[in-house]
Length: 435
Image 1 (cartoon, helix red, strand yellow):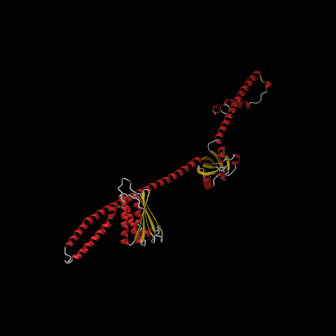
Image 2: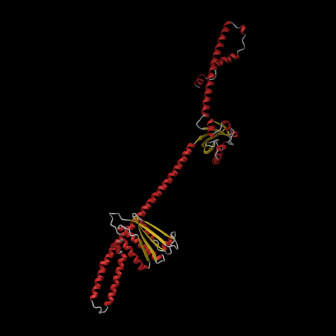
Image 3: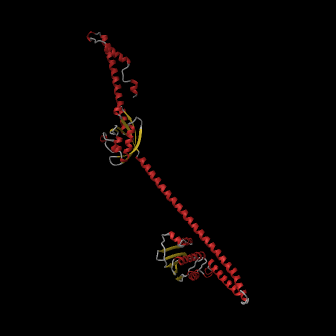
């Protein structure tokens, strides 16, 4: 290229003038020329021949450079990292480089003349149509991204960047075809990863919330049970105060009254009132805190409870005891006794039966108590019915059993009575037992 610039493709002005001058000179008769003139002519012809040889050499060099430049351009075009296609207004492929044909999976000869839409996926046909319409509406650069179908049915995501050129009656669109399949796959993988992460975050958040709710429920159960224990201790204190205070006072009053003459006016009536007050104090003491549980243990308390239930509610409770040792922690015994008492009272009030059974079974390191009645039963699915019928306390019992590490199970159906099973852990060797 530099040699062409240095020498040029035209003759030097002096040589051209001499050539024109010679061309305008009439033919010379060599036979009439002098020897000197003939020598000068031969010299001029030799100079002209040398000039022609130099010009011919320059032309050959320029031709080689043009061929090399053409080859470089051809290589850049044919083997570019992106495809190049030229389309007419109908979408037919007029030109294509080898890269474009390779991207579409066909031979270039088969590609030329084919309609470009043949390689566009059904989902992207609309986008390609709008792209062509916009591109041929003006001469500005247009860009779109479409999904294409290779001849081997492989997927190709492509970006088209094209511009229209040529006269109005023969406009063409020269477009670059850029493979963005890897980018699209990466975007889809990233989107899927984001969805997976969002799902996992949602699941973990739900688990955390569920864990927090479980902890909250456990805290509520613990608080409720602690409140019940505190209430029971207060009941026990009040019962002792009633028994040791008011009960003893009434006893002394009755003893004093016996020393008086029954013939005195109103003495018998006062004695009757004091006796009634004594029974009321005993009942209140029993209601506040079962004295048998504290003094004689859990098994004796259940037998006393069965007698009391029959006297108060007319429900006969048959106890089936395997007689095994059942050491219970004082806290567990108290919660278990309160729960059994509520279950029996619930059966007496709502089961519409006069008979029930209570069984005690020791199994390994736990106590199993089963309370069964043959009353009207109820539907476990009808929660509103449970509340209205007084079965709301079953939930409270379930919470208590979980608090002490036990279990609660109920089976019932309308017309088939109800069976409730509660389990509680037995006391360890170091715990204070309450059998």
